Image (tube, rainbow, N blue to C red):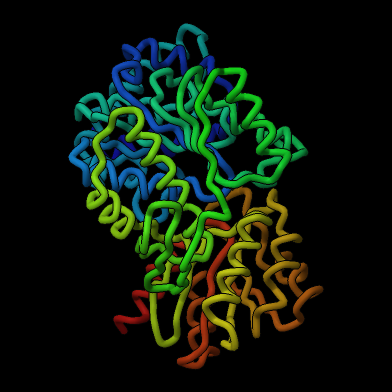
Length: 430
């Protein structure tokens, strides 16, 4: 199977959707020799901030000389981004070869009526094979959905779990209350490991503390009172946290300071677990960590920001960041979401900030909310709104409407931000 054939196969498997549960995943991995058992993991769950935590940690660990795998989903720019070693994407030949191996195991399972793995399960399995093949010292692993029944939760050799900010999202799968969602996210915690958590809502925090007690885990939590000298900016930000003075990060968004503190807590835990991470390596990794699509400035004059804020908690921090960085500026929004998201709450928090809003339908996805339906919902909060027929049209209209000192903000579903970025860059080259 070559790369093109491998991608066709994965696209075919993706049509079957996603199913929570570990039985198929365990069966598939057992047929592949359980490669995950030969690896060590930092496992990350949470609602918002998982990707940023992964970026900080994997950059720090690679910089410290540890061969570091990273597994993320979804990706914005290239399919192969989701499987990386030391920041390098899996090559086409390796992906094709491993898909061939995994497909054989899937075909055998289906022939024996032992289940049909989802595309996420197939991708997770081939990532484990790749990380073992590359002899990774550690893998930073992001959950896909939830925790307890997420396909990544087959791993047993975790050295640490990180839990980023927990909020209301995917309620149809994870539960209708914050407590139920937290229970699901905390499902990745393994006995007698070290758990590092962001500051949480009291209900979520209580769940994490209880699970850690039951499983005899050490728990470190970000202390909101330990921040000093915080200086925000969309090019660079600096802060002090506990004994860490004047830490510099280039990831933008006011919330990145707290995500960075989560990483610093994880660094201290890893040091206690015997990992050698020097201050220089940590500072360099924090500064170099990069996570495109999370409050990323992709153009200037006018400033264009892309951000994957698609749920109420993410919308709140987006609102805080816009008010901090761009106070007094005219804001132009490009907005697209999935129909199964709580987009009404996102609209109520963000729409009042905009001078004008253009809605789009996220392309090639059955879950996408039509641009006209989103426009009508936005109009109840901000009447200055129109629907665009394509992402290209939305970008061109926004660029025409905006003055050089204005700010264009594209947000909502991560699924359209890569294409939007390419459209902005294409206009720049015209």
